[in-house]
Image (cartoon, rainbow over all chains, first blue to last red):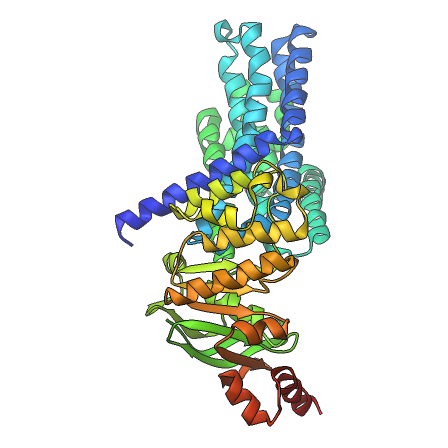
Length: 272
Length: 235
């Protein structure tokens, strides 16, 4: 492919990203989502004086809520813009530019609601002078990564399911599985196989679930051993705090990249 | 201009196109006809690259369309059902498609022809079916490409707009373009088409002029000629 053509494709992807982003910025759901975080930030900071507790509460909310909103919004956006997508498909645009543009539009606007909604109260609180700025930034980066991961997973589900109801069902199931059921099964398997060395299994188990991975990552940074739990402790023992942070970051990025690659691949082969 | 060789496409167990060969090499208006489910839309969508064939090759102006999107600069397509993002204004949609596809100078005259000025600031979700179809027509014809594909272009149009559409199709033809149309309205097809491509069970059953079709089926008029093909093959 010559460079001129490649430039054209890159430009079209950015254009589609822009249109999807504006489209979502106009929708009232983005505002609701933004206002929710704004309210949450204000309440946690100004009505609760313990900053590290506020961050832990935020973490617990973010790692459950962000994946839920990411999946639902992703699936909803895909199905709602189906007709528009078909209009775009007949234009001289590459399929990957169309779908990646839409995906980044959704993921960016959701991340923006999160970052601005929580960031604004923190700025007013005087966070820049406080020592927890890194913990807090990590929380926001992690929340954004989770948004990118679960929106990508949602696009994967929607691309593979023509039937909306089925798509929504799978999306909710995915969230339930990773946010709630996974931990239960994981714990059960640890109890059942307690006679065996489980370090590797528990490390693998953590890596295979982005929500667990995020929790471990934040708790490692906050250095609260009491909350790390068995898997977190193993993680810390195995990698140490710094390497543990790096490894979990790399894994989270893998969780973004692999589903995106599948979006590109799947969209190339799909009939519309 | 469009060359299709040995095209196969199935959706699950449903074989839609079964080794279709088609060559359209000259300018003119070609009507693709066939009973429901004969593969008209699948054929059109394959040419547009929206449906990916299981087997076979498609060349558009000597360019293989596989893993290619640039050739679509040479095709204008009017989709069957015009569904646009409903919270977008007509003006914004036209601007957006121009932004994505390239410059167009024809849009203002087309908007005048189809009397769309009063609707430019309305949201697409609030337009009637016929008005949406007019927007659809403007979007299709504004790029002046050598190949035009129209899928059921008459849907929802009032008589005046229909007359204007026919005139528009004629002017485009005179510019030496290849126009491919599908329609269920036989009188429309008979009026505009130079050649008929009749699809049956995923293959080309007949290709030629309307008079050739009439003489081959020994029927006095076009509608009966089509009906006789269908009867013969279902009886």
